[in-house]
Amino acid sequence: MKFLKLILGLLLAVVSCKAQINEKSWQKITHSNDDAWFASQEAVTIADNVLLYQRNIGGWPKNTPMQNSLSESEKKKLIDLKSESKECTIDNGATTQEMIFLSKVYKQHPDEKYKAAFLKGLDYLLESQYPNGGWPQFYPLKKGYYTHITYNDDAMVNVLNVLKDIKDGSANFPIKPSDKTLEKVTVAFNKGIDCILKTQYIQNGKLTAWCAQHDEVTLQPANARAFELASLSGKESAKITLLLMSIPNPDKKIVAAVDAAVKWFEQTKIEGIKIENITNSDGKKDKVVVEDATAEPLWARFMNLEDNKPFFCDRDGIKKNTLAEIGYERRNGYGWYTNEPKEVLKKYAKWKNSLK
Image (tube, rainbow, N blue to C red; front, top):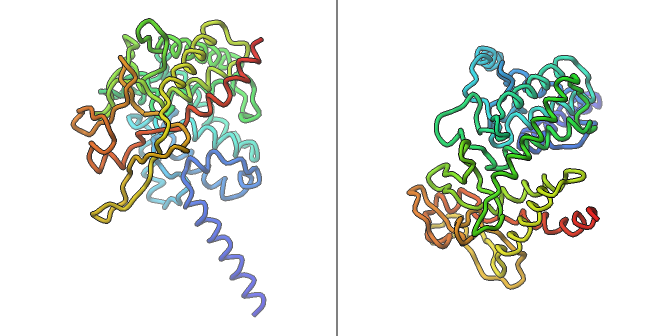
């Protein structure tokens, strides 16, 4: 009886552990630093899923919970999809987070198949870069706004952070590319930074911040979805600035870009409000803006190119002045405010002093 209880207890523990993993988002799993877990058989099983989801071109599709178990028929379907490349993207962390995950598993299980998949992913990132240094949202190119240089949801910054770690020999990436590939990585990173500097928006003769996407030819701010109009972004500009601040011995152009972005963040911060989730008269969860003198600063996701005035948009593409003016679906289904620039402001003084 005791033996049966012990076995039952172990089975319940395994089931509970798998349930916990399945409850976590794929992003949280890939960014975990639990070396012991990455050494587990569970991590290896998931890594094999990641290999199945990778397309022959080297990239991965987005919004895919790769930690979920796959049936034999699902595995066969993924194998049949290997030559299909239209879903490959860097949007929503795709491709970069799979490479990060494989690196962590490889560190504990140095299997050549994980190394080969990682390097194929790296080749994909290098191949998909525009000559001007930017990256499209999808590669091969997908018609529409997807061809724009994509800062939205930190897509291009995620790529550049991976390239930076690889070229710098970071312990985060134990898989070492060939010297020839490392040279390509360095060139691609430098071109990417140059693209960032060239796309920083000039407003009334002064550098400010960045749009979530820029035209791949003119480099000017560009529209995306109907509610994502060309604008200055309080969210995406934060991670871009932090990336620039992470570069050792920055040149004058980088310093000027950071200084200007920080000044813009100071000018555009919104004080005295916070976002609350309430239950509205229809019994639904709803987001509202309320006054609060003690609230930490927020920044609008979108601000007018000409005067930095925040705006909000529904799927009709018409600008509104307040969050309350747009419909329920977009009001609650999108991040209209952000606090991400606070990390930039927190680190700026130390960064500036380090240059002296």
